[in-house]
Image (cartoon, each protein chain N blue to C red):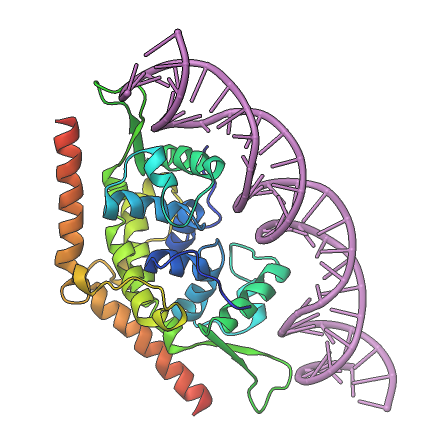
Amino acid sequence: MKNTFRSGCPIACTLDILGDKWSLLIVRDMLVQGKKTFKEFSSSPEGIAPGILSSRLKWLEGNELISKQKLPDNKKENIYLLTEKGIELAPVITEIILWSDKNLRKHNAAMYSISEAGFNQDKVKVTEGIQNNYRAMVHSLLG
Amino acid sequence: MKNTFRSGCPIACTLDILGDKWSLLIVRDMLVQGKKTFKEFSSSPEGIAPGILSSRLKWLEGNELISKQKLPDNKKENIYLLTEKGIELAPVITEIILWSDKNLRKHNAAMYSISEAGFNQDKVKVTEGIQNNYRAMVHSLLG
DNA sequence: TACTTTTGCTACTGAATTAATAGCAAAACT
DNA sequence: AGTTTTGCTATTAATTCAGTAGCAAAAGTA
């Protein structure tokens, strides 16, 4: 599970970890939708296969973007939570959303509107709000 | 070459186009390093194979992130240039660089320093500077 | 003008990754 | 006690990726 980076370029290093069609969607599910369990990730509209989900969760855990744990009152469910490293991906996700909204909407009529989330009004505030909201959720779960 | 999007999520749509290990590196080569030819992309330290480079260039062209043309005084070289849609990926790249610098440096001792570029001092100015610089280069090439 | 080099690819062959489905053990619910 | 839920693993097939070789057209050189 040890990573070998292709080069010293910061962008290439990030892509060595997150450069695939699924990893960032799992981070999205966690950060934006508050999803925490295998079942919840499986239920996303993109339809990730269980084998890929399993391997991605292990990979993200190995790269310290997420942690895996169990709650004391539930021996069955695994709870996956973003680490600070993972939470700090929020600005990347925000810029992707803004780019997509502006440039891809015309190619995908089914794209969700982001206007209600307020990204295009004050992206820094909205991004920080999402991060703090997530941190609060983690805190209330783990105490 | 027509894209079928997995869902209406703006993040998923972006990953349907750019979610692989190479596409964004090509955009980086163009935007940050001013690379324009097949040869120049091939020479990047990550070592993309010609077949993959060829398919990615076609893919990016089909998705209107880049354009392919020849200059009047050179019948041999193809010149690949970012469209506005591609240039607007700059903020995404900036946030990736900042995240990587902060969170991945400890795992990759060979990572370049970004301090000289000034990203961490005024990211908006630096990002806009890169974009305007690229636009000027395109303008001076095509008139 | 002929020869060599450069450029931008394509073709080919494995290797690796991904996708889709089935299934299963432990926990939890009824 | 029986059923359902959860979090996976196993299996197989399809697709993509990586690495190398090679080739045609253009351009540079003698």
